[in-house]
Length: 167
Image 1 (cartoon, rainbow, N blue to C red):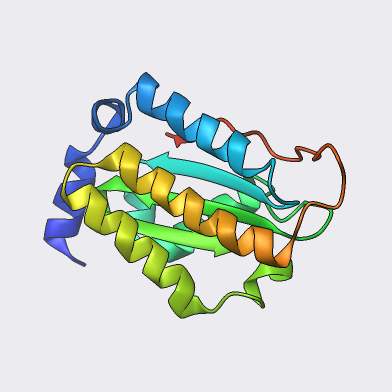
Image 2: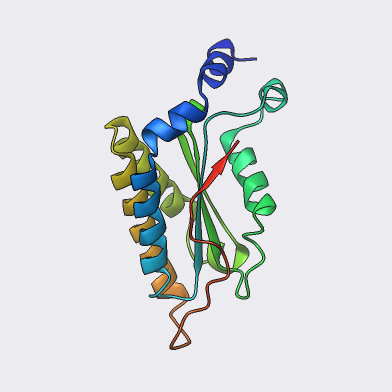
């Protein structure tokens, strides 16, 4: 059991989320997702969480495990072409995780996903949360354009574009 991790999770809360992701930033992220999804047939979802629950901490749940759980809970796997992507941010751990559905995941390597996460985390260390998320969306957009080009004149929006703030 990592005491410093537990402490950081206990100190993080919804005020932290609101301070780092104010309404203006959330609106910019939503717009970036909307614009991205006009270029390809993929679906992007952004979720941010201040901290894990006490039970999750006691069970030593990792940010990756939580991201997979959120991916399932938000039904990102439930898209027509299995090409949904979750960008998950766990503020207390200062961790970014990307979970992609099987239709896209076999096209993009784990190291490519990790490079996007590291770039976002680097921007976050500089307090550039909006810039970091939007840059991540743009990079994911490139992969989706390559592997899931737009097949219809008007794209179908299968997942909400609004960022999800987990409590």
